Length: 318
Image (cartoon, rainbow, N blue to C red; front, top):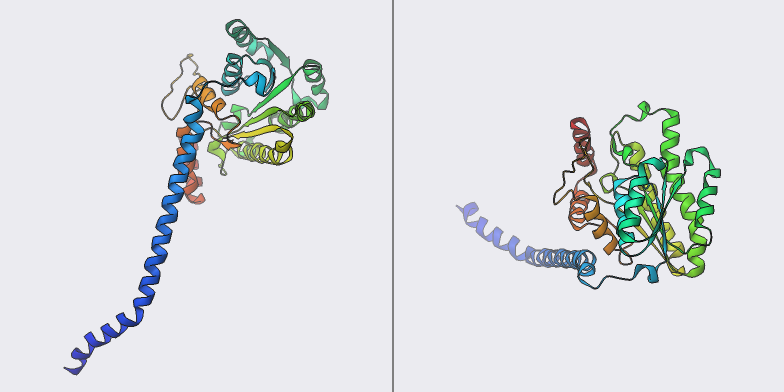
């Protein structure tokens, strides 16, 4: 009976001695909840400031702010072509660099006729060496280059085991993405820094912002583009050159029958380009499209082992 009577007394004593710890834990929990609420409000504000407000204000004069001409590397890609057309809509003349000039003849003519700007085509295969820069140098000479847009090759997004890629194909992949972006940016930067204005945009892949099995080249190239952009920002930002890393999610592409299946999460290239261009001069690192920003935010919350597992399942079903 004494043992039974002593339990409530023991409980009261323990509760009394631990009351200060309970209050401390409650205070810590309140601070944690408040910090998460502040972070959520900050992220919501950033989302609105970056993706919605710029599209509501009066269109900017990109030619006056950055320059008359734009170099588009990897211009055969759907996003690059859409970005070039969006720049042309703002009065910017474009230089389209591709490994297959025949594939862009119609696109260049359409841009020129529709928007009344010059569209110059340059064929350059950077897997052939640094001498490939010569025709690019000749074209950009004495031009007010205000934009450099580098876009990764979409063929890198095809799931393949690394050992299945031949040496020559791997050489071509790397040189026409990483080397091309580096060399073209190198050609345009001196003039931009001298004029203290200009933009460098490197478009990679938000879906490979983390390592992806069977997409080793794309994952590595994305990491290069992202870090290349951020390093250039710290190096040339104070010289008037705005450098942006674009990490888009999935963007609709044209099927074999010429149809394009698009939606809210998978926008058409011209829709994505219009959203991405509105973030220019505001964010140095973004997806360029607000639904993709939400997706990337969720991806960052997922442990890497779950991400890798999901990527493997996705690769098997494609």
